[in-house]
Each structure stands twice: as structure tokens, then as C-alpha cells.
Amino acid sequence: MNRVLIASVLALLLIPGTMVYGQETPPVPPEGFDRVADVPHGAIQLVTYPSKTVGVDRRAVVYTPPGYSKEQKYPVLYLLHGIGGTEWEWVHGGHPEIILDNLIAEKKAVPMVVVMPNGRAMKDDRVGGNPFTRERIEAFATFERDLLDDLIPYIEKNFSVLTDKDNRAIAGLSMGGGQTLNFGFGHLDTFAWIGSFSAAPNSKKPEELVPDPEAVKKNVKLIWISCGDNDNLIHISKRTYEYLKENDVPCQFFATPGGRHDFREWKANLYNFAQLIFK
Image 1 (cartoon, one colour):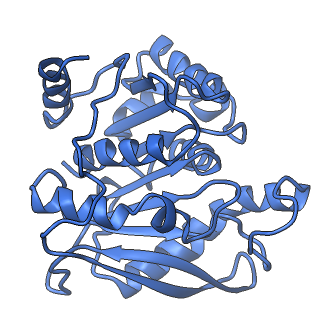
Image 2: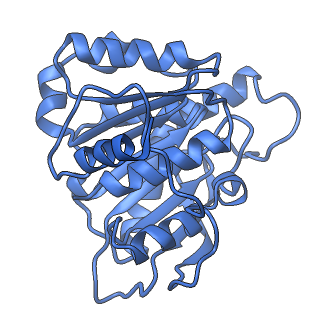
């Protein structure tokens, strides 16, 4: 794809309210999009919140944008990790704080709070041993209640954020991409922006995810589904997109040429997704 076509596609995507049914190639981020630049920087902090769902205090990493002030209310992106990660996976592997700092400085993204939780909702949520045990897999499903009943209320009590669904987004990679589909479509009154990056097999079947396509069309402002075309899990993303298309639910779907199951794919997804939400 040449630069002119890339610019045209990106321009289309950035038109407020525009919904399309997919492009073969996603917009390519520019050189340096994920490098520290001479721009104002936000802050990263580790918070601990009480989880009635799990019965212990749990951790999340929170990014606040440059110039964060209690005098202003911000939208919130809940950004989820993969099966082998923790609340630190995105920061260590993808540096969303750098990507967001740069986008906000260029006025390509709205200043937002980004919450990166540990999506493995169990008392011992550390990484180690076999990540595919039944207990650990079930913990990713249990996180649905922890997110809705414990983490979101904590964030809304302790940070200066907007609290309506139109100012709340959810996105994630791999296992977190599956959680994003399950939780986003399962709670249309909570999230208006859904971004699934290389979704894993924990994703529910499309007809279970979207039993009422009209409700999705009414409540969700953006559905972004992307996966590398060299990723063995691409069939998960494709089946969801194809079902949405069959039911006339607008969705942006991308199969990245040469893309694999790694942070090169996920960083590019975040770069593009962050420019579209809360607009």
C-alpha cells in the first residue's frame, strides 16, 4: 500500500462517526510512533483496589495523560493483556504511555486515562507454571465481575474520569482480545468502544457474543477487530467479523500482512484504535 492510499484510509477512519466494514490493510504507523519524543509526558502508577469478587486486594497500572488535573474529567480505556501477562505486560511490551503521549501531543488522540489491570482474577494472579490450567483459564472469565463490580467503581471514585458508557472503551490483546469481545458485547450499557487485537479462543462464538445485532448497532460507536494474517488465531477474528457483517453490524476489520502474534501487531493496533475512540 503506497503512502497516498495509507493517508486516504486513515483519513476515512478519523472522520467522526464513520463506520466501515473493513479494509484489507490497516493504516501503517509512522516511524517513531512508539519512541520517547520531546513532548509532554503523562504518568504511570500502580494502584491497589479491593476486589469483593476475588476476596483480596488486586493491582492495576494506570496511565494519566500529560497535564492530568482533577479539574477536568477524562474518558477511560481499559486495556487488557494476554494469557501469559500481568498488569505490567502492556507497559513492558507495548509502551502505551509513549504511544499516547505522542498522539496526544499531535492532537490525534483525546487525552484519556488508560487502566491496565491483571485480567487473571484469582488470589494468586502471578505468572508462573502452566498458564493453561483450568483454574487460570476460569480466572480470565471471573475477571468480568471483578472489572465491572470492583475495578471500574474504584477508578471512578479515585480518578477524575467520565462515568458514562460513551466515555468508556475496552481493548485487549490475545486472551485480553477475547475478554474484550466477551465483556464489551456482553455489557452494551458499559462500553461504547470495543477493540480486539488478535483475539484468543476464549472468545465466545459470534452468535453468543451478539444475539441482538440491533442493540449493538444502537449502543456501540466503534468495533475494531484486527489480527496478523500470519497468526494461527486469525480465524477467531474472521468469524466474528463475518458474523457482524452478515448481520449488518458496522465493524472495522484488518488482517495485517505478515503480522504475527506479537507486540509489533498490538502496538500498531493501539496506535490506530486510540485515534478513533472518544470522538
